[in-house]
Image (cartoon, rainbow, N blue to C red):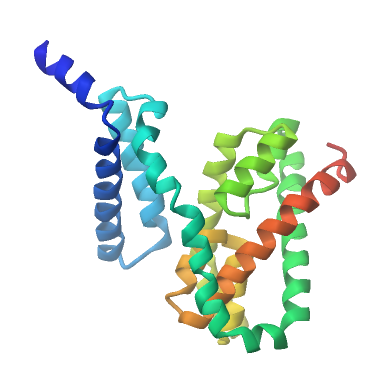
Length: 238
């Protein structure tokens, strides 16, 4: 009984869950490396699964966990801003390809959202689930905010974003080989549009140029989707 009371008191310390999150991510990264960096065992997905197990076993609620996890959450903004550094180093290439990049971003965002909604309609999903599916191809903070504003399920939207990112990282190499794509900028931009932050992180494995264009695509697609979805959704009858 004393041990349970001690744990109940200790688990409210924010630093505990900060340490748990960091340790779990390091373990997940090691597992991913041992598995050949397969997207099926992406560190984010593995970390998410392991933390859920830990919280279930310790009967810890999400609010308590986020007292420590919030410190990592606060670093998401600066981490995204840092992506501007390699982008600045390739500014000349961005200027040269500005029109194709804009077209690719707009088309990619519209296709990602509309195809998800139409497939959901074909399977008879409710309007709430369709609105949750729509922002699946943008980074989590934007997807959560958009889904909540439109009447979807924010927590489910976050999970769909992770699944989309993992699938994008898995499929992209096969698409590149099939279409003979060798340009780093194209590889990175495709991953950024279709697989958001996870795709951008994966793009850096192709090189700094790919990572830079992945970050650009992620930002452009996220911003455009946030403005586009409220207009697109009524057109699709939702």
